[in-house]
Image 1 (cartoon, rainbow, N blue to C red):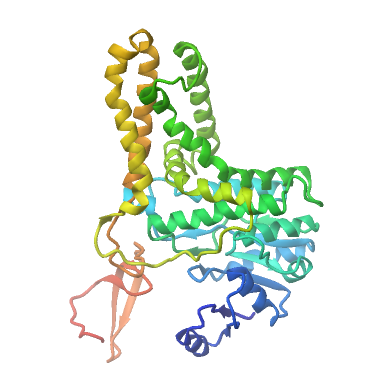
Image 2 (image 1 turned 135 degrees about the vertical axis):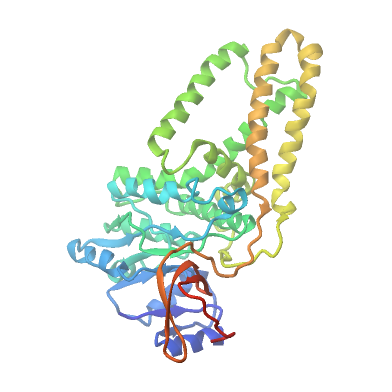
Length: 438
């Protein structure tokens, strides 16, 4: 087994670190094609038949290769095997809204449910980390795909177009850091959205050779999913067309519209809850999409028009937030939408009693719609209130038996309260005095 650190930053301290712990250190003269180019450049120096890839914040368990490598012996056509991305730190939604460990995070639906479904149809995507790839499959497709900013999914798609299988093991075998701020989270999702639309334009799975029907549908669904920004924003602003401008947003009697729309909304919500309730709560799905919709609309439409637009951006991890603050910049779209919805509510009494007194039912229906939108947008706006994060290393609440051995050889037993890469809190069984730095 050979371990290499691929350093596109070419930092001397990383080189020294690799020398000290006895692993390989690989650099290249340029940064062409970002992460994909970095991996492809390193692969030229390596001959191992299997390649495991980890982002630098992911820490694999000791059982990672035991769980994954054997499947490449069982299935000689297996080109890639993916394991979940598990995060041991709260994402911006969990930290800023205080929902950590009580509400499934944004990635749960994909890694706990959808990837399993993709695996059923032999359509598992490569997610860029926590995966093992067969070298011969990579060589056959020319290495990691470099044409889009989601090189991972594009790579697995090209493997499957050549007849290679992919697989998913729904058992976390590595843990990493979630995005530290809402702005970093949005930036990461913009890249994902743009990249998937780029793949749709360059290697549309509906027309790609070598894929089965189910594989085409799985990949196509993943790509067009990121076009949700347009209908989401229409839903959040549609009642304002009537309330502010007096125009009909949906032609028809309000009672017939309600009779059609309400059962549909209730049934679709119940169906989603039944299918994915453990991994994505219906209310939080509205929040996740609302937060991202204003930002991914432009990049996805531009990628549809010209798939070559856009560049790869690295997601910052491990930051410190010294003081709680409201990120006005990232929250600007939510503030604008809230303002217009509040204006719609302010105009409602005038419409109800004067302007549209003969259509009071229509006014009330739009008022309820606006109130619902205000709750959703208001919650999305709250995510922009960045909670304080004073520690550079995430602390995990772990109670474990520990033993401290002092310089004179004495052992002191205790129980840990929390642990991190940078330290921990320990309750000792007996009173003792330890000097600074001991």
